[in-house]
Image (cartoon, rainbow, N blue to C red; front, side):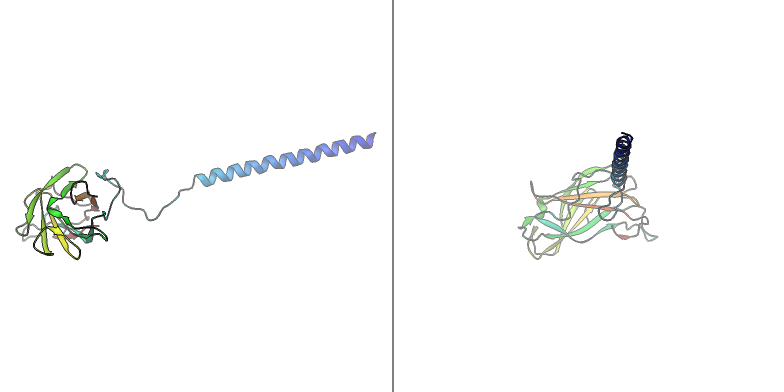
Length: 205
């Protein structure tokens, strides 16, 4: 009788030990999962924080019709003593995207946006002189004699976006400029930041 009781006690102890091990294992799994879930996940390089939400929230470097060709420049030419403390003109080149059909760029809509400004700029024609305030113009020197952008051509877009520190682009400020080639065409959006130190001519990053 005593021998049977000892067997029963031993069996109970084994069951308790096994049960205790299962509980510890589950706790360990739960803790591990929770710890993994709190670690940051990075998707590619970290970019500067946006100061505002552009008209088109996601940057589109190439629409189905046109694309950006080369860099974007900001002009702050002032007097002979040096540059003025703000960018007054934005300049960039466009070309047809691969597979894109000809587009009459003169029929485009150009929108300028900063943290405090949202403005549609007026089309000011082609060639010289420079555009007036709140106008944009087309330079077709790398094309033919019309405003129809075709394969193998490049047009330079020049936009006069300000004339003072209150409406020009200041150092370290973000901007978005959108070119909608024609009505209901995909929009080309460019998002850039002004440099910390403004020179006469600035490549905008």
